[in-house]
Length: 132
Image (cartoon, rainbow, N blue to C red):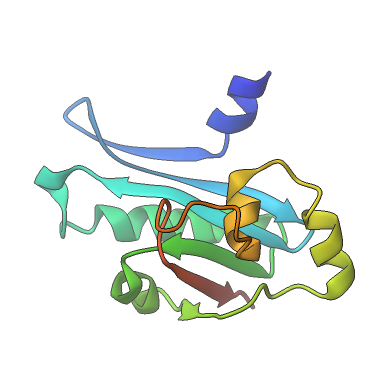
């Protein structure tokens, strides 16, 4: 069950039977989700595959009624091109923040900017996209 829970979040892109890109949408709260593990094989960088993945994940978030998408990244310009902006603090109210603190998910810990998280493991820029 844990495997399905993780796998069903992913989309992959194949070229000639080879996986060349992936990305995941992880719902963190009723109106907040994280884009995770967006990656493209080095041979296919700048081919539009990363954009296809992010666009698909944004559409899936919209279909789920998600209003805000969060990501941790080193690729700021790429995500800015897709409408994300950098943020300094967690974009949730205090009550939600307190409930998220109970999570064992390291992605949630990164999202909240907790000091216990090893720096620069998933990205050193916290970014947010408001969906309409």
